Length: 346
Length: 114
Image (tube, rainbow over all chains, first blue to last red):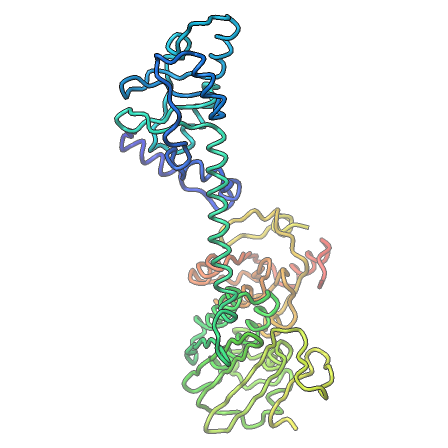
């Protein structure tokens, strides 16, 4: 196709498709542009030569169960003969007739390297049932029908579907496929003190990673909120920032927030809703509501907070992936939000 | 009630990329300027009314999958915050009116805590 540079610019501009518009374009429509005619056509089609008797053509159509064939002479495409031509011949009752007397000579062809949409357009314009496919030199390389296009698109959709299945399977079966006594995946995040611009980024990434690994939206959200509060605490309160470690196992997610100071002098007081040591400046930004630890407690199945003033703080949070954990027979089913263990709170 | 109706009724300015707001149906409302309170109280797909305008509102909104954040009192987020919101698909709406007025209007329209 010969496109002038100016036209090309216009075309490109039209290719800008918003997400919303893209929603209306189905995958099969997209495939009409992606797939080439040569990907879906029938190769080495049955051919007829002009000298064939119509009787032989009828025989071929019956044996091969086809309704049309290209007519080729000396390697060149000279016509197409179809079941309609056979009907015309039969109605006339001519006994001695040859293919070249009944075939269509004005052959419409499509190029093998063109997208399938070109063949579809041709079918719509001409109402023919089959189109001979030629290469760039005009030699016959195949034949295409609407049936070939349907099959080709279905086949492509099937491969798309399988590829997507494999991707999803790989991510969510990461653990099942790896044999070990205990498999876990650890994500590490370095959190900078006082960096309020990047605060929340680690927890966003944690949530995204969990969803990717096949966690339910609820579990991902709970982990996200718990990690967010832990992350914000590291940003607000620590001397040198800290680290968030997320250990993902098939049965649970274990999140740790570790820092090297200043430490919490009174954990019980720190756990009291509304209590915060955040400065006025930090509170003005909406942080330091004194709700962070309570939120973590609410979102996790177990929470352990250990701190030594002058040394540092370690916050451990566990979220189980199975709804009920009956690890020991004596363990009573607990109500949500109450099964936590806060060290130093007793 | 759709987010579009809320935008029209309260005459809100959309700071982020436009979406088809007539397809977004907020399920509840919440207001607070303390992020942890929002974390604890705001529901999934809620509309959050706040006068906070710094980057972290985007992180909170994204984690809670909120329908939109209405920033009140003419507080203006910086370009970085708006860019972050677009990246996360969060809608930031803006008004000169105080939170009290906005919440009152939303209540009048029928939005509840959920």
